Image (tube, rainbow, N blue to C red; front, top):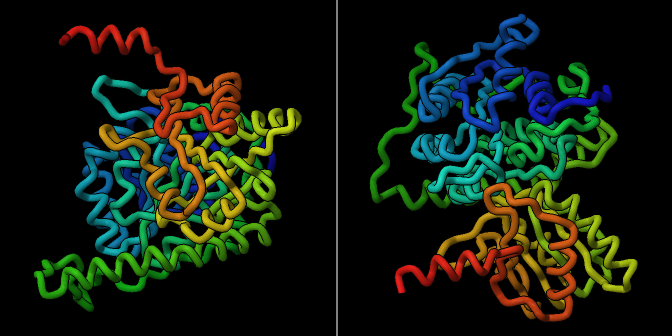
Length: 391
């Protein structure tokens, strides 16, 4: 059903259609509208049986999700920014226990200084926590990815983060085709856990593991992540066959077949990038875009295949590692050899990424005039003034 709807409301509707049995959340902008909508749906009785649990912190939210999932319930939560960091210990525990929890990350910058606007610094901190990470380009994909996330999580018994840009998507109104309940029920069967806590058949989940077995535990977690590289495309294909639209998957190439320069990015900036690339193509510049939907596990083979013909690769980063540089760039460099690979950091803390700025950066990159680490629209006068103070 097509509706003009806020991104958060669309995600809430998609999550509700997946019939979670436990939803636990603590409010933090910009994810609050998602769990508010879900709480209203539970209270009205439209989503039943489901228990919505108000918790006292983000750490408690993930802890409740862990407990619910361990007892065999389909569990969901959402957070952003410092909230994700506050639940960090439990985030790692959920992955280590192999619990198929689905969590929305409404991407938001991490302080200090405090900033409530969008970049990817929060989810990037958790890139090695053992969760699958999926990044949405628009609100249609954000809604669709949640349905696919439950399917992937429960097929592999691995938790999944669905990352959508805070405010840029969560608070934007777009036309979204919301799936019908019967269609979701046909696509996503009832959750059947591999093992769960049952007083009549007691087992231990999450016991201490010593040095004699811990390496094997971590190796098995790695293997499970690699299995997702087959499971995610299979689920995306099944989704396309069931719902008539292609979303999800590992990567989304755009005009890359003959491109000399390819821009790699995640999230909502892909829409602007495609517009700019179309303009540059009209000017005769052979530039393409590679959108990465699945960032963890990193799809090395798919990225390598998409960048085979590229002479230059520009990685547009919405976060970076201070003292090192591009985060996504390090993975992309591991996938390609022989191509020049540079990092352009853009949109930190919600700074607009304009078509004009992107156009200048891509023209310079195509001509080989971009440094290996570039900050888009950096205010050099401000930076120089601050650097001069200690001198």
